[in-house]
Length: 188
Length: 188
Figure 1 (cartoon, helix red, strand yellow):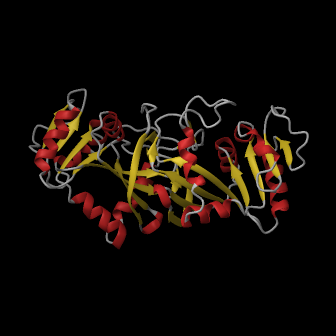
Figure 2 (cartoon, helix red, strand yellow; figure 1 turned 180 degrees about the horizontal axis):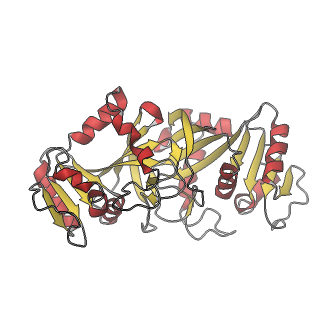
Figure 3 (cartoon, helix red, strand yellow; figure 1 turned 45 degrees about the vertical axis):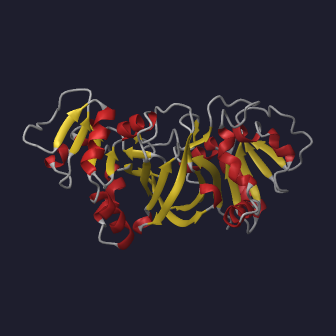
């Protein structure tokens, strides 16, 4: 059965975007710093993680991630994309057959798993992560820890209930440029 | 010259204590989970880090850390302790010659460095970390990342300015029980 894996770049102080996120400032002020490493994908370790990310079989992302990224032009890496949203699309998705808008997380993940077959379902976005964690629908986390404190912005882990969610550490990779890729499995 | 090193156990979601911290609930609800590893100090990796922690030459800690811990009985591991506080001691420290209360961070760190000689100065506490980072007085971080999401509580990184603080990753140790010890040097 396909697993859901959250892939996120996060500063050591827990942020996935800088302050002042807007459609025209999608990563927030200075948030681009968190994604520098993905442009160094020809180096061995970061490249391996990047390849894994690009070998996933379906995507479930929040509209807060998808829309500021201009919907990746409707095609991330050729796989179907479910976009979680409480509103109508704020960008034109009518010509993008791979994209499905929904506000039904359970359904999106079930459909994505079916589409992914043997492959992994890539989850992306802070709100999506929080909803999936709360619903018990997140199987694994792959966090790319960036060696910087950015001080302010949007946190990956926020608005969670006070219940502990135990994790099993499954892999630590010391990537290039000080990026540490930390992989955990959610214990149930 | 002695370096200041922040030693903190932190959940993967960034908390160093659970919610409802009080003098009689010093780690907050469930916060003890973050310190389980330090009782496994006879295993090789966690033990090595624990020994390093106990080989530091002086301590600078916030009163919010020191007082709920009952001042470690006035003696952490035989070294002088500077306690940062904006108020008079709320516990009786009059019989503890190793303990000095002050609200002068610069002075506390300067005095601690002098006392530590060739050894490291251990910084401890979230407020102390934030003040030292803001003042440019923190040299290194050693974070013990605990494989759990605790959801709510006190964050280590909070109230920082939006300026980026770049870090150099200097060591990653995969400790026992899923604890990952991450060491960084602050770049200036």
